[in-house]
Amino acid sequence: MNPWLVYALSGVALFSVGLVGLFSHQHVVKRILASNITGSGVLLVLVALARRVPSGPPDPVPHALVLTGIVVSVSSTALGVALARRMARLQAEATHSPEHEPRSDGEGP
Amino acid sequence: MTSVAALMAWPVILPLLGAVLALLVGRPGVRLVAGVASVATLMASSRLAWEVAHQGVLRQSIGGWGAPLGIEWRADGLAALMLLTIALVGPLISVHALDHLGDREDREFLPLWLFVWCALNALVLSDDAFNLYVTLELTTLAAVALIAVRRDLPGLDAGLRYLLFALPGSLCYLLGIALLYGAHATLDVGTLAQRVQPGPVTWVAAGLVTVGLCLKTPLFPLHVWLPPTYTGAPTPVTALLSALISKGSFYVLLRLWLEVFAPVLDARVGQLLGVLGAVAVLWGSFLALSQTQLKRVVAYSSVAQIGYLFLVFPMATSGARAGAIYLVVSHAAAKASMFVAVGNIHQAVGITALGGVQGLAYRMPFTFLAMALGGISLIGIPPSGGFIAKWLLLNESIGTRQWWWALVLLAGSLLAAAYVFRILRGSFLPLPAEVKVRSIPLRNELAPLALALIALVLGLVPWFPLELLAIGASR
Image 1 (cartoon, rainbow over the protein chains, first blue to last red):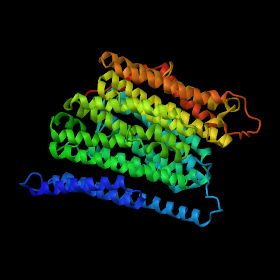
Image 2 (image 1 turned 45 degrees about the vertical axis):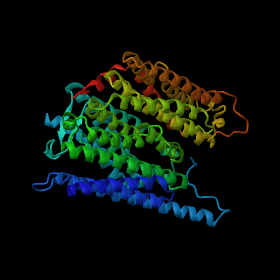
Image 3 (image 1 turned 180 degrees about the vertical axis):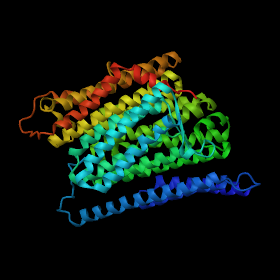
Image 4 (image 1 turned 90 degrees about the vertical axis):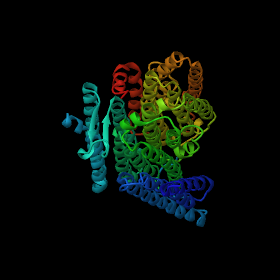
């Protein structure tokens, strides 16, 4: 078996594990982590594809794609974690002061 | 030629500049900056559409790097029509958002909406499979921030829910694109269309791309995130999501499917997408009919209307393509007008239940006129964009001897009529004496009316959009 195929198949395995995690967990942080694993799987497949022609230098295009993919995944993780933190704080405020109405600036839904 | 093709940059640069400037100037100038950026982007989009209508398809290599290595952008009739739709519908929704959201949100809503606009325009123009992934992600991230703009629990919950369904969708798409690149060593959509061959890699890639984009759009049965997200987001944001943002992923699917995958896939796969679309039409309409909250009625109606779009895949003719695109455009206008009208009703009486509309037609005539006109387009009664779209799809279902889709179209229209009339009927009952109706600004009443009139005009003069969307339909 070619070494690149091993990496590509590991990438597919990571992707699948991540997807299962994303849809089987309720906890927001676990789901964000699962989406990270899914993303790493895809990026690993891309890295492996760069080596699919055994002779000569590796194909640079997938590497460029992986770099872009990492930037996208960092941004989406940061956004997800920021939202989750904010939500946890609001929920904590709501449970600590039960007689206090949950804060709402607008007019609801 | 090069100078004309360079016009493609402006619909992306102008909203981006506007967004950054609006963030920098803060409260005093944010409306002015956003207004100037919106008008400028509308003009740039119109100019590009004008050139496409007269000169045909335009192409541009970003940074002067051509297709095999660099990124190509391509403006065909469909792209031009989408640019125009976004440039007309989006700003009308954001006019409504000015008074609907609070003061702080105003400062954040406008730059975020300009980011979404920039990302959607780039998505529409891109002709590179990986660049499409990046624009899809940009749209998602800006949209998530928009959903949570109010920073309250329902908004944050809706934003996270959307993010955690959109992310796996994009990643499925990306894995599919990675497989296509591995097999054909290109990311350019035009070159992919030439090189792609039937075989297991293509089938798996097509499956991943399709599932990913169906999750984002969303198609039944992947729509579970839609009702809670649409109800939790502030109403103007819901209008943007339903009218424009969900159309972004459908646009990518439509182009990749018709231009790349359709010739190398079994016709039964198209039939499967059609069946899921048909179930979405019936199930979504049925659920819309059984809701008691006004906003949920309109949200479930989106599940159904997205279902119609997928009827293009089993027919896969140029007429069906025109029908689906026409529905994308007219649904954008009609559904935006309905969501904005719902926002007005909520602002005026503070009630979200369906029964809350009782008697309001007398006090908010423009809002309910907009609701009625938008509803006419959703049902598909002439003259409306929805009618033209359904007529085209109906013709193709008979023409391709797939009469069962015609039944779905007719049943969907009947169910849509039922849920639209359910809203309108209540509004003409006498106004209960104890209900206090707050007056809302005139421009908030006129915004949904203008949106509904776009849907109406699409039914009265269909020639221009139909001729435009045919430009560059086949490569």
